[in-house]
Picture (cartoon, one colour):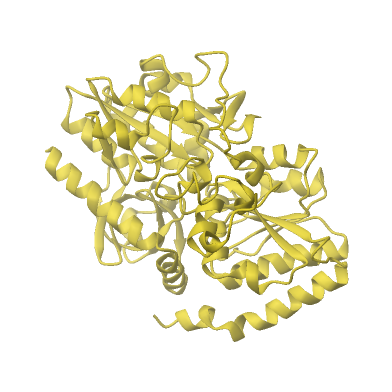
Length: 97
Length: 380
């Protein structure tokens, strides 16, 4: 929750709500990209690496930084926890509908 | 992963460690009269223990573990109110999983769920919004919890709800901010801190200027740090160098991620949605001025405090006494070490936490317990 997890933006899923699909260690998750758009067209974000906090992209990072951060998060057990939380939340929504 | 070796390799850290040792010697600090540096962020606390940095650094340097774990500083009365909201039949209560096991005075959210309350763990407030869209006949309440890393996400979700006129969505806002408790610690007469390692991801949002008072008014150094062991060691060295040179500055070791002025879009969303509360209760620390955020009147329709007449400021007496024998407050202010608490490892374990610092892996006590503290006999 407190530490951001790195992911790569792969697709803009809902331009109006500023949502994009982000690949976080192989898990795809819809993420709000309003904080890193900086007024540019959202399509420019495809391929960009970002730190994601609770479903919001909060900062652009480079690939090397993304790898390093992910490694630390794995060592701390935080990466697994975040990815599990993403999956569980997804499942909860599927069951709710 | 190709970069792993770089920071797992003790040789890479050796240079920084010997510089730290030299600096501690230059300052004249010893085991009996150590330099005390507080890492504010719970993520840093966890990393220090995970990588054994406290054991690698010289005895004249001591880490004091700060209040930077939002789960750990969540007062029991707030948890009680969460349970109260969750037990309303019309409510779907949504929360980050981290908050589920925090003890209230009667029960935790996990126990409330077992008792039949409709509580859903969500990864993101976006998922709470989606639940509200799909369940127009229910009231979806999101528990807004956390420091500046999560405050913007809640603010943006409230703005989105307002945009869509999603009337069955509201936020029980218990967001808190990092700088005020640092000020409270610095004002504490027992204060023994010589400098700070500042939080990385919080600073990515707010920038480094909000820490200026630490250097200017209290003449203490602060260095914003990354999460790799080398980041942490370098930041500690930067703090020590300031102390050695008689300087007190705000420095940014993590500039590759933290812009000095933070994230403008996040700051703007937070300014639009929140105002500061006059004061807010922190578990173990008491009430701290201007340390909590409240939803502004213009978004009152999405404020669970307003909607359900619950929450902070409703009753006069707020501060809830800690369970007997629980020394979380003293641990958090650096007065005692976790294992000096009489309950450590006995009445309080990660499986059955009594105090908040044992609940989250980012709490000092849980970290002590997980990384070797458990074998140590508690000090009577």
